Image (tube, rainbow, N blue to C red; front, side, top):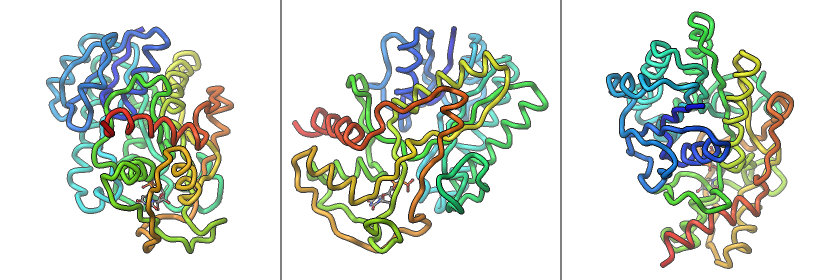
Length: 325
Ligand code: UDP
């Protein structure tokens, strides 16, 4: 089976590529290498250097014929999306329209799409299931929701099947250490903590310790990127068999607070990781935890690596290997 992974050189994309390769698929990665890394390309996969904003390049690669496509190419910084909405609508929405139109012309279906828990906005109840109201708090989440709606229309009008996979907080790295590209300028908690551990940043800012949570800091649902990656393969196989689209949350269903993560990171890294409590970050809910019951029921998905220690230790290994020399 031939799979096209658009954005396959990025952080999640490289793990997704690995998961398909591990299951014996023939994989082609299409990436503009803007935020993806050449080091993340695997010998066993084909690589096409191209951009979803260049329709002729998409047309050329898709003419190769594929049994499905995973689309992960996007801008993903929620804070930045509020400052630069034009860039986000262009890259995420217009870029995906290009992907869908070319996939439809080349009769490539299903499309496995990277969506996000950001489509829900502030939780009205916990854990957040797929039926929770969708009211994004940031423009990034809005772009993901609009794309989900487009996918639904392409399904209805063109018979293009899709999986919209709503990630909660993706973290960690391949336990077998086969991924070599470390994300630069991280905006997420765990890599920021690692940058403090190695001295790239002087200290961690804990964004608020006065939330109504067990220790006052924000609680999130961290899910290991290899667990996410496997679910893409399962979603693809589900659609082939069932011939219908699906939308699922992927989270570990376990809430971890900023302070709990910090304490484990200090133990696992053996580093001090200085931290200070600062003001809350705008738009941050106190707690966000997924219900992943649907992924378990339909895909048989059970996270294997999403415990705090594996999340921290696999991330730390990357920093030890590529940052501390
Ligand atoms: N956070 C923090 N300091 C940081 C970055 C994040 O305290 O430097 C907190 C943030 O307020 C949230 C959690 O860590 O409670 C996860 O934030 P992240 O930006 O990684 O993901 P988000 O949940 O915002 O998508």
